[in-house]
Image (tube, rainbow, N blue to C red; front, top):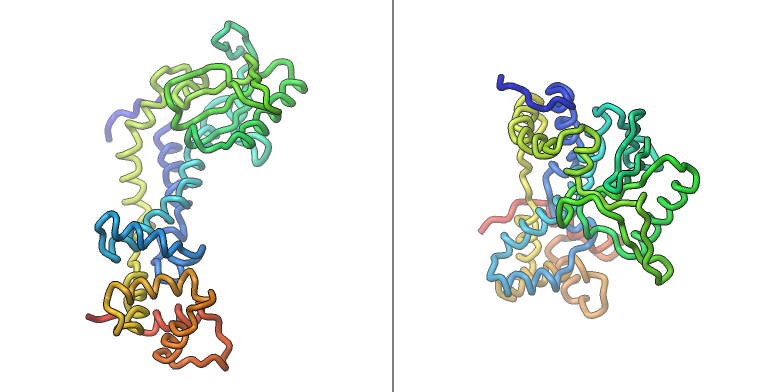
Length: 302
């Protein structure tokens, strides 16, 4: 076992936190069928444009959409990693509500202007551009209120992926006026790690330790299985109902039914699907349910 270089968190605690983060992936590791792909209703027109503009196959487009959906959902899991690792750091609290992290130091926390406070309240974001102007203003007002209630604190907006390494006054537009305060600061993750641990390279050291620890956690826990996604095969089965239209048109039609099946003008396509599925209007099943059931009924073959 190689020497552990992180003095602010033990190897055991670090591995435990990594394992908990992987465990958060949960349902995102399950197989994606047509119903899962369309759980939030896909945009058939965008996918049609993307396929032709990028010169991709339908299989590639579907795989890319599945990856996009999983990636979007996993962003919160990475947020869990960034936030909850501080629960292992001396002086840090990760409260259940209110603030993402609270850091207290009885010896004082020195700010860039030389002022010293003893508590820092943190709002944490994965990336610098994830808040719109309204959210930024609301967060700033929350921080202003905290300063009114505690004259021995500072408030930080900590960004895991900031534009640059920084610890500076946060300037925000509130009620059409630019406002800033020396105790309300915009801080990159590396600078916040330095404040909490005393080490300028603490975040770098965490990044360097991550690849091996993630591999170890995955291997030891055995809870990561490669999903078998069937969405493309199921979509091909639906497209086969419109086989006389040509492969491209049939695939496009099956995509349209996912997004627009209940819209006016698609009655012929709905009838074609019902004809091959054997499910009648009298059974009063929704089109999407009909489509998913038909797609699941068997595997597509060339």
